[in-house]
Image 1: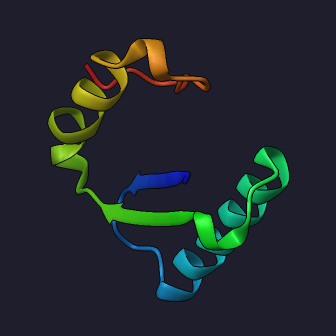
Image 2: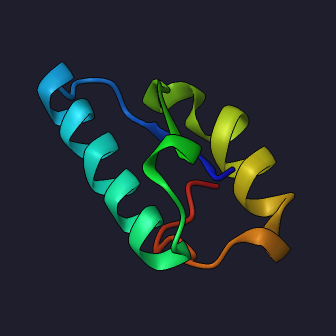
Image 3: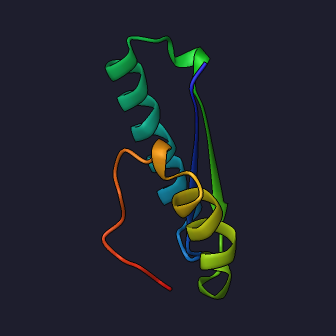
Length: 76
């Protein structure tokens, strides 16, 4: 039961978010050989001034052992 959470800056349209959810679902089902019904995708908007506190620190720094693609930036 893969669940993918995407956190990004606000400003993407609903069409872009829907397209991203479709692309992620396709990638997950193809890569993990799972059914589309088992995949869920959540997309959360996070403002730039909240990014470090709400995303970078808790999801990237504090969970470094779970990050398979590290970011190329350091907002700190």
